[in-house]
Length: 177
Ligand SMILES: [Zn+2]
Image 1 (spheres, helix red, strand yellow):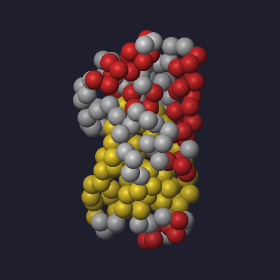
Image 2 (cartoon, rainbow, N blue to C red):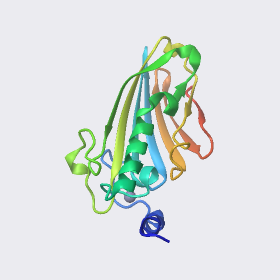
Image 3 (tube, rainbow, N blue to C red):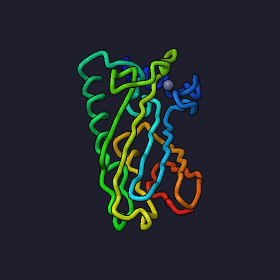
Image 4 (cartoon, helix red, strand yellow):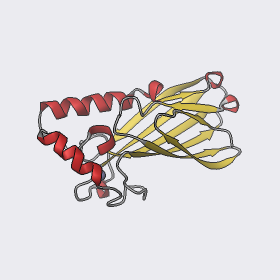
């Protein structure tokens, strides 16, 4: 077993240490999504430990790790593959912002750093032709990130707020209460 695999195995055992920037528990393999649906607009806030994206939670130390980071960032910027909304709603990505202190990405919360653990936050804004026709979303996070197993979702829609969960390999989630 090489060193990186050994680190992945060790990180896999640590659960729920520290607290994420927005007060969510830091659980390896888990992601949190906040989905806010407004007229003509959907905002998705992603928060996840780096471990589920990279297998490590610090700046890359060599070329192989740098490639891993670049691939993860490219996948996370691919909003159209990560969040596929009901086609009739006519949603298209308007902006993507990623931030992670450990990866020197974006504009992270300076209070985010925590001993041995690190997160990544993403904000995705979609403009939609008709959010009244938005009934579901396919979340594509499990495909590019084998280390991710569970997604906890909070939805705020015009008709109320509710929670959803996705466990690998499920992708489709109702956005109707
Ligand atoms: Zn961690």
